[in-house]
Image (tube, rainbow, N blue to C red; front, side, top):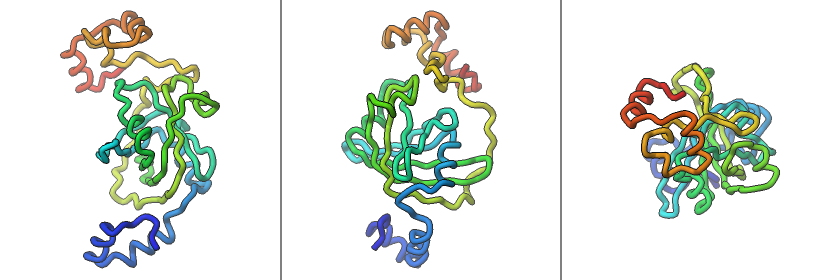
Length: 218
C-alpha cells in the first residue's frame, strides 16, 4: 500500500496509465529518513520553500532564506530552521502551530537538483535548539515523514549573485528592514526597531517602491 498516494492521485495515474510508474518511483525514491548525501544537500542550501495549512485548510507557500547551514539536520528524522524577523504576520508560524503538516522543497539552481520533504512541524520558543539561532524570533523543528529527490529537468539553471544583507550575523544582528523605514511606519514598530529607523532615516513610500523595483534593498 502506498504511503504517499491518495485516491485522488490514483485517479489521474490510472487515467494516464502511470500507476505502475508511480509505484516504482515511490519504492526506489521515497524514504522515511534522510541519508548523508541529503543531509549535506540540505545544509548547503541558502533557501527553501515552505508549504503550510491554516486552520481552515487553506494552503500557503513561503520563501525562507538564510546563510548556508541555516537549516540544520539534527538526525535522519529531524531538521530545524529559524523564523527570523518578518512582517509581523507570523503566517507560516501560526499555520504550523495550528496544523503541524508541512512540506519543504530544497532546490540547487546552480547545479540543478531538488529535494522534497513532508513532515510535522513544532514551534520552539526556548531551549538549546532555539539558542542555536541568534537573532531568531522562533525556531521550527520538523519530524520528517517522507523525503525524496525530484527529477531536476525543469529547474532553470541560475547562479547566486549575492546573499541577502539582512541575514542575521553570528551575534544575531541585522540591518533594519527597508520597509520599516517608510514614513509613518515607525509608530507600528517595536521600540528597538524605532531606534534603528531613527538611525537609518525614513524614506517615502514612493522611494521604497522605486528601490524595490530597482533591487536597491540595502
